[in-house]
Length: 140
Image 1 (spheres, helix red, strand yellow):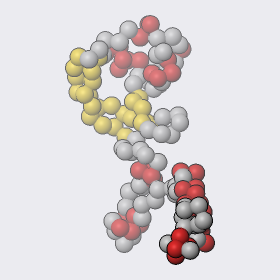
Image 2 (cartoon, helix red, strand yellow):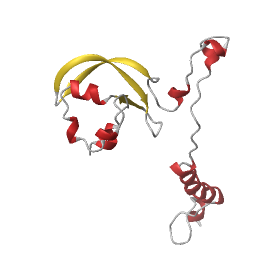
Image 3 (cartoon, one colour):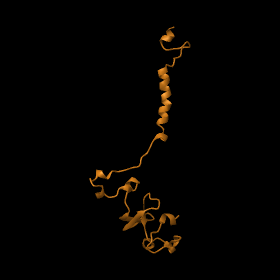
Image 4 (tube, helix red, strand yellow):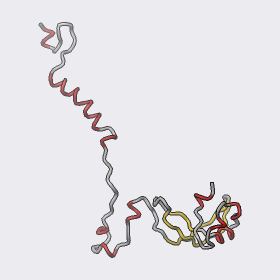
């Protein structure tokens, strides 16, 4: 009966103790809980009180929470056409229709002054002269 002394059964293999059985049963549970399906993701929020005691004195930071790196406005930008530098101009950027980022507000006159063949863009002639041309929708 020395095999029982060393935790072996009558065939010479190790017996599974109740503690070891519980440990093996917990492994699949741990793997299940560690799977990505159980992860939770919260909305990003930056507390403006970190910058000032008065939240009204801090600029609107909600764009950063949505992944927007710059607020809408007019920025000085380098203009490239066909990988060639053309000029540096002030360009107005507005929030795009999906609300995920900014898109440039370029008018028909601005595009023509940059050397863009505006007659090749379908539907541009029916738009107002000072309207922003939705380049991503019109050029396909």
